[in-house]
Length: 598
Image: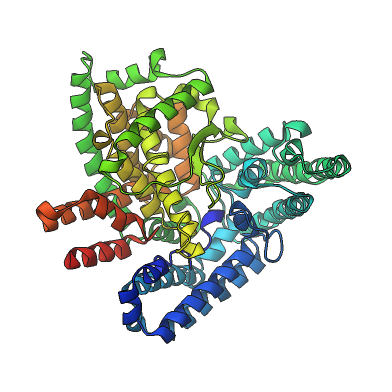
């Protein structure tokens, strides 16, 4: 389970801010009910923050209690379950009808997340996840090095000492994970061999780094000027000792255990279907990520339909580009033509900047707000050769630093230039950076909403996919190759519906999924393998993109038909954006109420 997503509760309290913005709405709610609900939200936030000290650090705050809490440990699970049950009990004592509309939205999101978390405890899925904790995409063994190298801001001696304590806690987590995996093996839970092999490669890459290049050591390579020389020497020695005597041995223990004990008994199949109780886990994964009740079979059928539709549009783009071969020959042309790829990281970064500048020229036609935070592209901090394309991470809420797309520069030769306009729309403006920055810069919203703590993947990734679809309206996709690049990225999201469900529910083999993606996209073979292995290790997440986008597109069509000449796309976008990440049915109900009152 992704560390960032372990909290299934609390994080979507969408719109307490609506109350402060609307005196009329405030007058309609009973003050006692509103205050009880607000206090419940505050208490829940504090309880969550106590369990997530590193998440607090990303928000520029120091831990409220322990500086490191093992997110897969029994103590964490016990505390989390108690927190979520307390939230549901507190909500049951509050009359939802007595709340104004904004708080009613928050109430529904809050209840949704808490119910899903408690449901995973009651069903035993949470316990199963802790017995099969390897994650090559978002496991803490790769996430914590990123955190130390780029995710935490260290401005004082105390900050450095806290981070050193966190490093010590992390090495304890590494050692405890081996014990959890052993218990899982004893109980019959074996993750797929491909996951184990990919984690092993990451561990090997970590152990091959000299101390001076190790991301866990990197904090002492960037001391602020305010730290005295004596403190620098002391801290540098302490970090070096921690890496050499604790971190390296912990990773080495993983290497030995995974290679000698776990890999020989790992599941041969690629999907969760091959693991004991894997069908239950995958069903929960789909619910968690899509925030719908769609079955794997339903999602698979939607994917097949979308793939067929996009193939027809790709054929039109091929013809417009004047390419004489068939579509599969066109795919190979995109994969192999050197002019479609940058060889220098700075050239790619410069291209992103040009795209963003062009987008901002037309943003006022579709959006009425602009966040203060800037957007940047930087190299992926650590272990790029063993990881995927990259990820976006928001900057601090005060916009003092930019939001950053960390791009894997080791994969320049697998990212065609014609796809970069679409990638910027998804990761930057008006995608993840725009959406998340607007929310976290809005201090009238509760912290749980501002900092995207809800596991509403279908909303966040659905918005990113929807943002891609705005390219023509924002002045992009002006030549056939750029348009094809857009369609290729859209095809990736459609293919994900097919292969994610195929791998985990329909018993596809890994090679079958690779072949399907190669047949229907122009992606490079290495990129395809990285993608497929990501879906194997992080089940369900890949299905959320298209599911979320299709819902937002459906809501836009509904609003256009309902409002006719009164429809203003900027108002629609405000409705989708101004209450943060919502489960899709809550978002739909909100938009429907807006349309009814419009």
